[in-house]
Amino acid sequence: MPRKPTEFPWEPNWHSDFRDLTSLPEDRVVRVRFLINACAGALALILLIIVGWQLFTRHGTAAQLRFWDEKITTHHREYDELQFVLRDYMLEAGKIQDAYDLIYVPFVPSEFVLDIGHTLPDRMTVDTIGYSNGIATIRGSLAEPPEQASRVLGRYIETLRNDAQIKSRFNDITAPTLDRARQDNLFNFEIVLKSAEHHPPS
Image 1 (cartoon, rainbow, N blue to C red):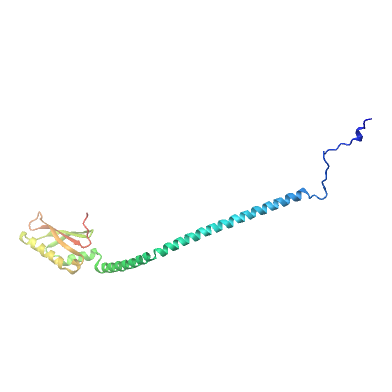
Image 2 (cartoon, helix red, strand yellow; image 1 turned 180 degrees about the horizontal axis):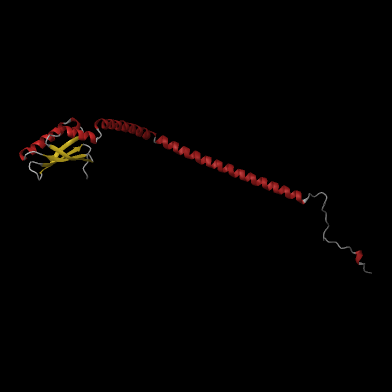
């Protein structure tokens, strides 16, 4: 005689369930502990990376310092010799500058015009005075007979060459031009004075 359905209770699992649900921790507590441990591990890893990078850079800096210390030690003798040469050069440059300051006299146009006026003969007239690149040019006229004009101009050139103020500034004084003017007994002249600092164009 078959049993009634109630006599065969339905079992949902094919094996026996031996879990003790009262002793298992809650799932939320497990998740919180996992996240805390994961964060702590990540933080420790970051700190480890930072410390490692600092040690690496410090090692590289120390290596560079050792390299340059070796270079300084190797070239120390050459550096000292260069310092001695530089010191000697500065001393010689100072001597040259002192000599230049003693020899060089700045050109003052007003003083030059006064010197020309004091030395100018009575029958000689100055029309223009120019100065450029260490060259002074004097142009004017001379009222003398033909047989006297060249001698008067030559004596005036010698006067300029012997003048203390002018010869301290100019070392080459010539009169390249002496031409007869349209009027009788009147000549146009040009006097060129060159200083030692003049450099002709190349």
